[in-house]
Length: 305
Ligand SMILES: NC(=O)c1ccc[n+]([C@@H]2O[C@H](COP(=O)([O-])OP(=O)(O)OC[C@H]3O[C@@H](n4cnc5c(N)ncnc54)[C@H](OP(=O)(O)O)[C@@H]3O)[C@@H](O)[C@H]2O)c1
Image (cartoon, rainbow, N blue to C red; front, side, top):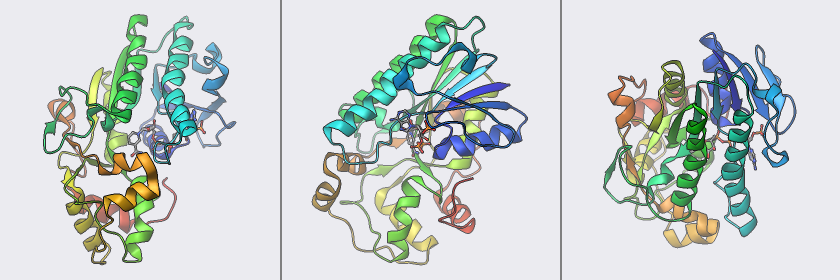
């Protein structure tokens, strides 16, 4: 299939492009920055701030994967919140406007969303049928998914992948945690009881491929089947690095360091991949310890391939 991908230069996009190319798909990488150099890939410039992508940038696409968005893991100043919001809501709207203008439309739009959709939910087990939660991120995700779902009116199937904490030693949440853990100062956040729904980057890329190749719409939780508490995650990571995890980071310190964004670190969601399991998707890394060992064996600190 020919797949147009936004946000392809990011953590998930880079791995996904590699996976799709390895399975014989062709890709067009849409980026704000300029042409992305990638062997075997076509690339085009598209900045959502400039309006919808022109027809030429999407023409010939059998599918579109939409990953672009301002990083959420930053201090949520008023300006950052606006960028986080607009890059997703207005960006997705512009993309759908671009799709509307095509003579031949893709069969499927696969749009990123996040498990932040569910808000902070304690020990409740959340599959895709769970109602959305409240708060900044949950409201953002609801709006983000609604914009993507508008493509259904164009006769395009829409899949929304509610992505959990993506584990990749070369970046993302794990990449940021590793230096502290290596120095022996990594510890659980707050009381550590909050659930952390994680996924190995290889499984997430395969889940996107599964949805793409089988043209499956609807909501998908992009998480491994075995979420853990933050305290358990800290223990397993400490063990994998042969560093006893210590020095818990109190909630009040997180608030000082990260401001309102600390809510995201303290919010827990116990999310399970109900749709993926029902579709017979097989996870390479259903358990945390082997997932971390695999990533750390590959050499933490190396850029994600
Ligand atoms: N990684 C995770 O753990 C995780 C968890 C839940 C949800 N997600 C969601 O999945 C998507 C991809 O995640 P990722 O980790 O690959 O993100 P990432 O590494 O931050 O990459 C996102 C890409 O979006 C584009 N982008 C960044 N800021 C933008 C802005 N202000 N306006 C428009 N485009 C912008 C960039 O591409 P160009 O510069 O090339 O245009 C960037 O490479 C994101 O929407 C993210 O919210 C990720």
